[in-house]
Image (tube, rainbow, N blue to C red; front, side, top):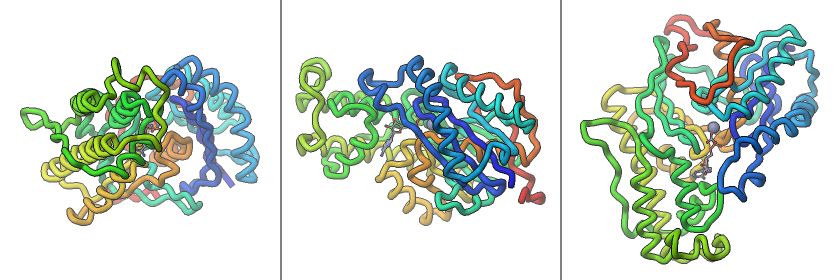
Length: 368
Ligand code: KG4
Ligand code: ZN
């Protein structure tokens, strides 16, 4: 048996996964540092790096134990090389390089965003990964990224990106302004579902037909309405008083959050519609932390069939950062034999996905 070992440490989740060569997940463990960063209202890079150092060894043990496997069963090692926090990335990279060198097996630097984009092809119940179609589009919405990519044999291209805040960042900022704590996505999602869209927000669009995304105007509009409700960051309860408990959120706040959430999803639908009109794609993957959002999942699941697009949502448990997705992305690159930097890969804070060669086979040469 030859297993793929994956390590992820780009931000505030430490994760280890073991995959079979067919992409089946044998074990996947994730340790979140959210509690350590919560009091700072965001991820502190130095704390993240140190926590990865502490968390990685026991997580490695646990991943092998759950898989009933030994280190010698590993035939390929993948670790996230970027984009992410350099100090945090270095921890996983150094460990992975050491293991690959020690075992004498290949090492592939994994791309975090590619991992997200491909995560919907993975199965949580141990089935082999789905075979990738020759072309597809990928919506990646997380705390640090909001991108739409096109994957094709001839290359990966960026179709749209946020010009300011990422979708998850907007959730986090809105929650912070309302005193709901960090991270904001899950709590805003839940509260929004208990409110009604009384006063919808306009969908942001750029002049000149750009299909880029933008969430900072929406965040400002939410701030203004919050202020009108007495939730101003300067004068309201958000900073003066204790953090607002979820169950104490007043109906007007729930309605406002419902309008915010609706506007986020409506903007994503708007861009996908226009991208589809510009260049059709048969399949869309939806991934990243915000892909856990209940309304986004519902609406995009309905959006696809109406337009003849197959929509693959990342399994909820794989929407957040995890090593399984990175191992899978590295495995596909290894199988496709595309060039990469191997053991000499550096940790990169910025690393445009579209600068990587495509790992998708031409239409006539399936990789399986
Ligand atoms: O992918 P991820 O774990 O980390 C990054 O690579 O950024 O994404 C985390 C982001 C956070 O901004 C969090 O608030 C958001 O995903 N998020 C959500 C939900 N769950 C997590 N946003 C909206 N609705 C959710 N249910
Ligand atoms: Zn991520």
